[in-house]
Length: 343
Ligand code: NAD
Ligand code: DAU
Image (cartoon, rainbow, N blue to C red; front, side, top):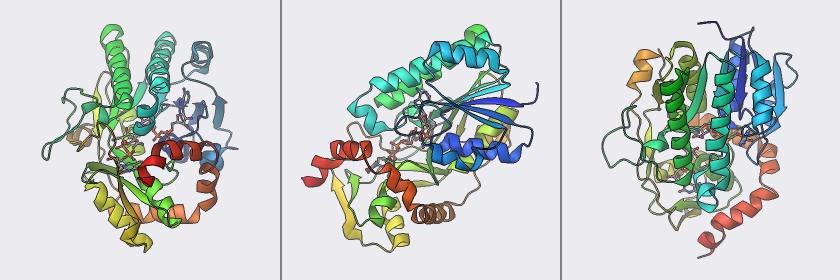
């Protein structure tokens, strides 16, 4: 297969996509990256400030569901790979309004697949999630063979996109790869997700809203390990295949909460148990043996170290958080947490 020189990354202004772009440009001096991003509430040009003036990087503001724009961009772009990170990514928001999730995650993926197929792009990678597999009991792991059983509008929209990729591979011999990763943490994560929300609230001595018992389990992976996995899948993966990534770091939400409070030297009295998330998945845990054996990849960042570095990053980047925690964010916070925190 031809080496990757020009790559289209969608959703590159978000948490994981921006880290992926920075790591790719750093690792490959001959790599050119075009970043197509709509700049929704989650997209932030500040995440890419360090590469903004790199001549190998180009930003295009636009919607992956815009068929004319995407057809032209991919048709004329000469890309060796398309990597789709663009998505509405937050479960709680999908429970408030699923419309944008269907539009971006499903229709947007279909538009990208059609344009990539038309342009005979030689690699297409769909960045997906372990949430498509549903929820586990106290034992067992998700493998690539686990049947899809999504439980939230977010995960249903991601599963629908995965099935479209699968169908294009099956029907058209399309070179699509799907990667499914567990919960990411690290710098530049939007403070609506558990870890950055709780760090930034604790730093401001605000309550930490733990849903339900706090005994739900997530498998945490550092964002750089996820990005290295995507790179490995582009390099060593096979079209039509699925690869799971996870950190082998299962923690309950309460364990995470106490760890954060300990590191931040803040009191446990900040914890507030609030009404549970509707349909809250109990446990996620990934078996990533296939990626380890077939992609020559493994998670490398030790969790305690990664968490401490992440806390330090948020401490040192207060203005980044403050820019976000204004305007629209306050409206969302009040809708999501207002009645929960006042009852
Ligand atoms: P994010 O919410 O931080 O960023 C999403 C990015 O997509 C933003 O820059 C946003 O502006 C852009 N975007 C949204 N709709 C768009 C559209 N219609 N057209 C173009 N751009 C659009 O998300 P993230 O946490 O970085 O997640 C990236 C991808 O990884 C998603 O596909 C998500 O499902 C997947 N994923 C995330 C995690 C996690 O723990 N965060 C784990 C596994 C998989
Ligand atoms: O597993 C991969 C998925 O991880 C990704 O596909 C999603 O894009 C990403 O958002 C994440 O989904 P989760 O729903 O697991 O992440 P979130 O950070 O929203 O929640 C993590 C856990 O913490 C979950 O059990 C719910 C709980 N939680 C979350 C928030 C925001 C709370 O208890 N309180 C909160 O305020």
